[in-house]
Length: 419
Ligand SMILES: N[C@@H](CCC(=O)N[C@@H](CS)C(=O)NCC(=O)O)C(=O)O
Image (cartoon, rainbow, N blue to C red):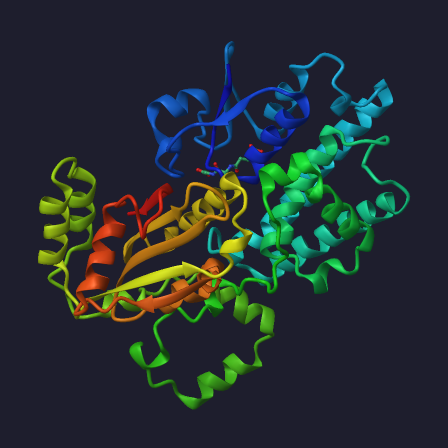
């Protein structure tokens, strides 16, 4: 019987156990319908991990949290598992690199990345320290890998699984080629590891970040200068500001409360997004007559717009699990638009390559700029506004909302809803 892992299917910490399971030959399955921020805050979940973080593994003897401990547990299910090396000193080195990876690599990537994603305050001096610590750790790793293919011994161990998963978020989200080229052995190691079949199966195709995400204070999603009340500043005051050292000004700027989203400044709409989401969720029968009819009764083309999206690289969708992961990750990254959007994503076809197509309802008459700027998946799709005066397009909207099968003559592998 499979062990159940509680996590979303895009979490690099959960990938550690899933990859370890592939090497170990045990079955670990992600819990169904996990919703980050909801499923991990229920009383049942908090009984398994009191701080409500994922991943958590359910075992016959009780739950285990902390991703490295979970991966170790999974690997220990096989006696004499080569993932633990072949001697005491190898085992010690596996633990050494796993801890190094958690504290020196993952910790520093997090302190660089998360403030830029808006999860905590972005302080330039703290960022500078995080990048310096990361470079110091990567330099040490690079030196070790100059004469070693794997972290320990001559085959993949648990240390490689932990290290690669931790590096993966850095490579995908913030460590551009310009940054990693200083560490060529780390680059070679990382790209070799992610191509190993047991890694590839779980991680899918890994693409390196092309740019460093801008910090929230520099993101263009904020109201334009013209929207802010202007204060007449005496000239002398302005001069004083200019004279301040750069760091000081930026540090003072960081804790300012977040400005309102420009979409909150739009004229009120008769369509209340939450009402539509509730109707969608609560309609269990007669979907066409109740939910779809309700949608068009509510729809306000002045306050909202409807968009079709079509994945540009469908021929790459050759593995169902990886394709579903990709779409799941997209929806997770859309979280920042929850107040302003509703979406349906269809994974189409009974066999590969699968097509990914979607329908999105956005507040405003355009795709919100902050979504375009902050969700990198947006540019992986072609976007076309739905023309609802055209009956065929309107029917396509209906079919996407209701997961109509067949869709454009094909079966659906999956339909995911963003609400
Ligand atoms: N050290 C933990 C880190 C777990 C962690 O930070 N999980 C994040 C997702 S990657 C989480 O659950 N965050 C939700 C929260 O903070 O409430 C591990 O390796 O498992």
